[in-house]
Image (tube, rainbow, N blue to C red; front, side, top):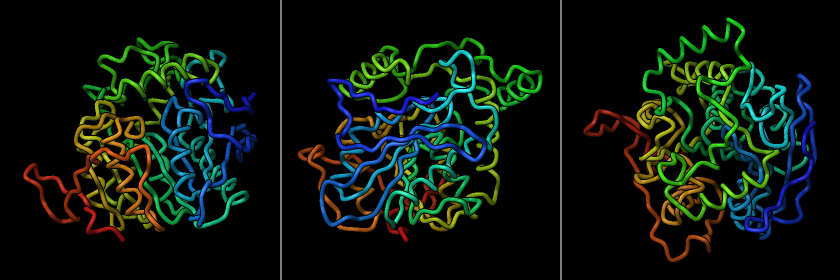
Length: 351
């Protein structure tokens, strides 16, 4: 059963005046949703947050507040198997999903809820796994948004030394019936609660400590390591997106933002994908780790500058980043080549 309420940590409170509800997907999964009104006028539209693996709505409280200050209605939800949405394993700390189509059902439900409750135009802000699911939906013409911002999309996994061998092993174990088992060596500990030193997520100790305290206090929303089923699904999704014509099939104007020091997903894979986008542009934040929205103020300043330039409407200077020099590296428009032989879309290519 989904946890319908939001959890507000005293050191990281959820923005007020939220509307919280649950909705069922076409295949019957119960998902937790929340939405907020903008705090300023004029209203610029509505934006949905598509979180990554092991995340939950409350982790995005800071970002939700910043989007509301930019004049957006905001909607957020938890993917099945994590946060306050329904889980389908007896041991609820397992990060499990059994089929790629399950995430497709979740996203379709979320898009329908946004259209039912919030006014257009619609935009999407997606991270990691959520960004990969969004890009795949856009490839199929099933992402009804005006623009998409994809942060560190899961197009390849850096933390796996031999990805092809891992893919084959996950596929074998999946078909042998071990879909619901943890990956070898996996356990219940949430990644956000592990020590800061050597973490893969952020270089900002303050935000890391905040998120760690939240994950510890909201243990019912947190999950541990993924299952074989999730890994098998992730490899299927990445294979779809790395097909030669996948990026070219995307017609939603897309801004891809990569983290230059990402130890989780492959920045070179993101570069190759972005170079093939017809309606896309790309940006690298050189010193950012995987969770760009949880990074330090300078890195986040670079993100918000790119966001404000890409999403239509009056750009605003975010008070949280005031006084910091935004860190950003705009890279070449499609077709331009870098010394390392990779290409990315640049700011000049923004549609």
